[in-house]
Each structure stands twice: as structure tokens, then as C-alpha cells.
Image (cartoon, rainbow, N blue to C red):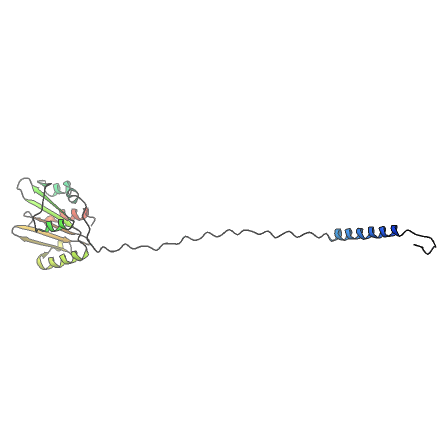
Length: 205
């Protein structure tokens, strides 16, 4: 290349100089900007909230509609101590079988219990029986007693007493049980009260 001074100049050197200047300018531009490469935003993992434990609705116990067996023993229905306090001459009769057609036999046939205590001196017996026949049968029995026996309010609102052929019979209807006590020893309903109270307690009444 011929310059204004009439001399030949090298074009190769000029081209290199230009390239170096462009590269330097580019580096300076990048350095001057000071731009930072953005970091990805941190993603926080949200912990799932603990699910509330569902509350189960209360289940009501179904009302009893049928009978149930009486599972306690005679020695539990009336303890030896209770009978001794009542009359020490009476002892439990282990081989007792109620008379056919009697109230005690009816209760025993209805999954109930029939027990007898015998007076070691006179030979008199006290028969106490209990059954859980179910609400319908309890109501029916109470209705029958209301027309055939004398109320015994001293033993509760559903208690009756009769005395026939020399035998006193007391019957009590509770919420779940039918109880009866019979003996020639009984002349009034209140005489058997301590035994019936003990029997009701043993049955959970």
C-alpha cells in the first residue's frame, strides 16, 4: 500500500492492529458490565401439613331386645355370708331341681338360675331364682303380676307379693331381670328384702 508520503506500507500489520483493538474493546466491555449469570431461584419444598385425624362418630350400643343367660352361680347370687346374716340355719342345696311348672323352673328354662337353701333344723327351703328374658317378656310379666299379686312398694315400684298354700312369693321386675323368692318362711314381702337386694347387686342391678 502506497501512502501519502509516497512510501509503500505493509497492510498485514495494519490488519493485525485493528483485530487486536477490536478484541481488547470486547473484553473491556464484558469486564465493565460486571454482569452475573443469574442463579436459579431456590425452590423450597413445602412440607405437607399433617392431615387431621378424622374423628369417628360415637357408636351407640343397641338396646337389648332379646333375653340373655344368667351366668353367675347360686353361691354368687346369694353369698354364704349374706345368707348367714339372714338366718344361719339355712345352707345352700347343691342338688336342687325346681318343681315342674314352678316360677323357678320357668326361669331356669329361660336361661336363668334357680337356687335353694334348706333350713338345717326345720327343713324349710328358700328358693330364689332370676332370669333375663328380654324387655317384651319383662313387660308381659309385670302386667300379669299387676293383676294377680299384691303390690309391694316397699321393695320398689315393680314388686309384688302373694301368699298361697302356706308359701310366700315375692317377685321383682328390674330394668333387665325378673327375680323371685318363695318360701313357707315368708309371711311378708319385707322379710325377703335383704336377699333380693343382694341378688340384684350380684346381677349388676
